[in-house]
Length: 139
Image 1 (cartoon, rainbow, N blue to C red):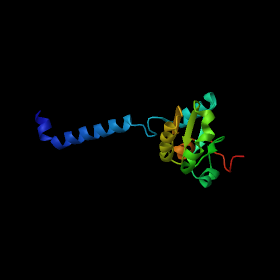
Image 2 (image 1 turned 180 degrees about the horizontal axis):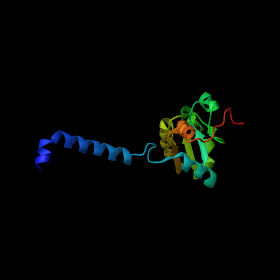
Image 3 (image 1 turned 90 degrees about the vertical axis):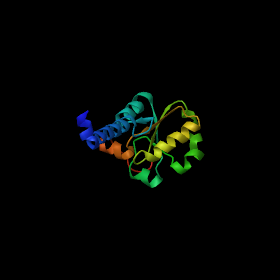
């Protein structure tokens, strides 16, 4: 007890840093429905997940996941009907870092899509994992 009284500042600092570490480890970076690059690859290969890139068209053309389709975030709600046949299928939403696609996940969930996931780290995370990107528009 004497140690705590004499080193109150250090004890409070240790408790504060422990709480911050616990908070960040419990909070998933991609939101509650985030998937890693490895998990996304498994969903694509095993469950025929549909990959939707919500970046602007010029960003998409510069490099995107193979077999992904581009529906820019500002057009997502208007073009969601293009995905209606996939309402029960797994959808993986992608952007540059995972921030825009997290919001897109929420939009599609409100529209009734059951299995929506956000690629944690986005294209940047996919690239840093050494996974392939395709350039150009999808034909």
